[in-house]
Length: 634
Image (tube, rainbow, N blue to C red; front, side, top):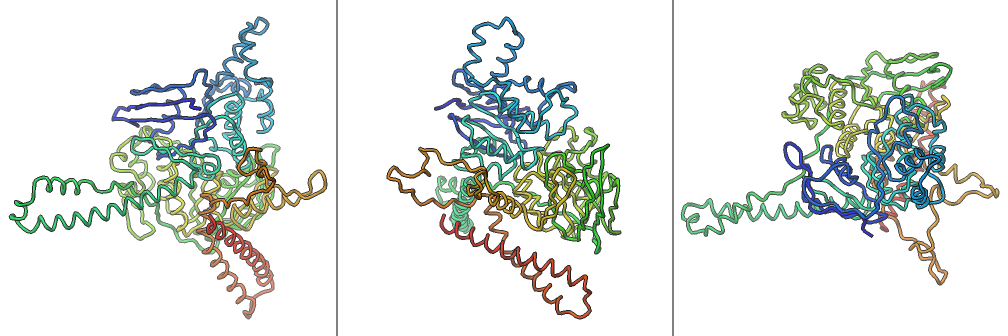
């Protein structure tokens, strides 16, 4: 059933339309993902649907009594706001009704009580308490100004999801959340009965929860059925078909132009209608999407030693954040850091940069180490300074990784800032543009140890993929803290897992391998009846009327092979080169065993690594076979 429809709508800015000719219908229970480059109007479209922004043209019709709840990207609050006050400060209709009931305590009109009963037998207060308990927000009197970004986002999620709503609008819901909370939200949305529209740069999350994709492109909104992987497949097919049509057009145009160039007589005898057609062919070239800017930067030479942490600890007051961390970050390391909010991930990065000193233990850096950190939020650059002057303040000329020397103007163009943008004051840039500018500044410093603290926050998907392409060719060390599972799995080859108690445990493998090991450990634990768990984690059993449930005759149909998800396809593409690299490392270690003069310590360390490499080769080979079989069967 349709709950909201938009007809021929347009929203204008000072210099033209942000989008126009918008026709969109939303049905009850729909799960929509909204994608588009930074600045194309994703948040504006959510505000239009929520009723916070009027359309400059067109009509918007809502079902009578439609209840809408919205999660804003950056919720606003006063410094003295408590969690409880924040929860009841939302704009969902049930929150407003509860607020009226609380104000009328003791003299509550009958119609308010009747309206509250329509929202179900469980009071909103109880739903808030249950959600906050699940999210670890026990103290309702705590001030939001004392909470971390992740904790504030959790409170905002509780405020959005607890009230009964027909349509929920979620603007970057995974920003600042840890991986466990993201997976909690994922399962919550998959079980939801309300319709929702989701804006996110998290491709893994988007692929899991959305069953249709809305794309904003060139001031239009397009709907694509299926999840994000299906959207990418159709987009690739569409461009392949367009490229084929373009090739045919160019071939025909070449013939016609050659005829016209044969001389004045030919031009005279050719009909004016045909000449107009040729001119139209010339003007009708395929409008290709602008090519992604290519991230590239110089790199300073890194010696044999990068960073060594020896029993390093960090304490804030009586609390130990990191406890006796022992780890060697070797040249060329690809290291991911994971753990719950508040477990010390950012503190670990600050130890590496030297921004904070260990309370005990030491941090040693090689003489040739040049560290740059892409911090979690945009830096506090003077908003009145122009983009070009900001970069010139950090690097007037930069030698790129391809050997080319570029001044600040060309460097910014290489990163997608045209010359009109460069004269603009930083204060006029969007959040995503500021983050991209911050990234240019970090890479212009020619680091050989690159630290990334939630690098995907506020970036659009195209920019994230361009950054991933750059990082794959980066020769220095990469240490990344990220809640973006697709990003983390593509970049990191090793993980440091922080458990929140100060302990740091290394894991030799990718994010997917780590999750697989956790799932395997969970499945092997005995349940309450003493038997091992066999049902996959967070997988609901099929409903009675589900196409996956047994047929009336009792015979269960053979399960249909599920297509590879976006993350699995990226994994499949990368896994063979990883196996080849491991095989090469295995051969190198085998040659070491027969080498004369190797010390006992070297041999022992090589044997430990050899066992790990053999295990990884077996695991990755098995995984590749599984993915290849699914790819062939789908």
